Length: 162
Image: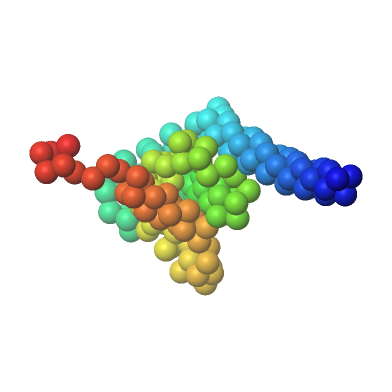
C-alpha cells in the first residue's frame, strides 16, 4: 500500500510539474503578445502607422511611383522599414510559438493580413534590391496563416445570406 501511495504521489508530482510548465509558457506567451500590442499602439508606432497609411493612400497611386518616393525620401523609407520590421518580429515570434496564438488572433488577425497585402509590392522591392528571398518571410507566413484560420473560423452559410 505504501508503494502504491508513493507511486501515486510521484505521478501527481510529475503532473504538477508539467502543469506548471504549461501555465508558465502560456503566461509568458500572453505577456509577450501584449507587449507587441503595446508596442504597436505606442505613440511612436502610431505616428509611423500614420506615415505608412498616408504613403499607401496618397498619390501616386501606382506602386512604381510609391517606390520612387521611397528612393527620394530616406526618412520615409526608414519609417516604412520600421513598420514592416515590427510585423516581421511579430510574425517570427508567432510562428515560433513564443506568443499566445489566441491573443495574437484577437489583436492582429485583421492587421497582419491587411498590411501584408498592402505592403506586398514593397516587400518584393526589398527582396529584389537585397537579393534576400526570405526578407519579411515570417511576416507573410503569419499573415497567411491568420487569414486561413479566420476563414476556417467563419460560420458556414445557411443558404439564407447568414
